[in-house]
Picture 1 (cartoon, rainbow, N blue to C red):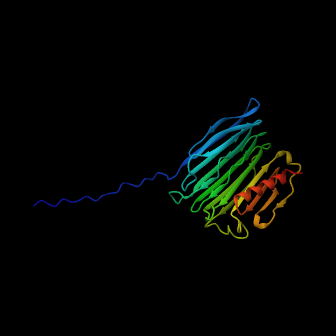
Picture 2: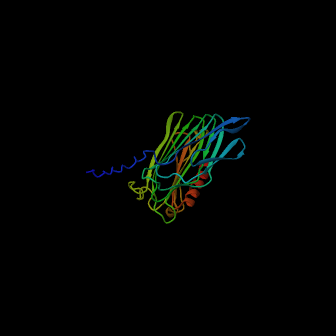
Length: 273
């Protein structure tokens, strides 16, 4: 009697262990040549495309253009910019950065590393970051300044799109000048962050931002602390001198438009005598 043939169990193929999400590092280098600033390195990667804009005097200008939806959950994104001795660089972006839910629950990371040499100047003024519902982003800024470097750095965050709850976003800004820490601060907003929408943090506001100005020529006469606001409902901005030739402007507002207005007004107040 011939035994019945046995059916071998079906073994599923092993699940891929490949990392989920985009890995990308984009790089910019600005240097002096012929009395102006040139860009010997301008390498986009992943969602980052760089466009040269018309120069203004000796200053080179670059616009960051999003080539795909990012950051999404699981993405690992990084921008590195180096401004060499005596060069001047202005970086902006074509549109707001939108953090979205991704194919994984793992957080996305978005790291910006900036270095500015002696006698050089960097103005880093991107459009806002919008934290959409369900997103999870960890953003970091690391800035290394030489003692005579100049910097204007703006960071704007809008929590949620219109009529939408925000995602989770953690952001940290670390600035060193001449190898010493000038500023190191971290903020955590959105679902799961303790007290982020309480009266001690954002209260009813859904937009927040900072403007950091480092100007070595102002070391002998630091700015006075100021509060700028029309009403608390329209937002609030505070200009505070740092322990160095720098000022930090922090603002809260109901939306991104009023946030930009407050930051601009506070910067004008900083520049006025």
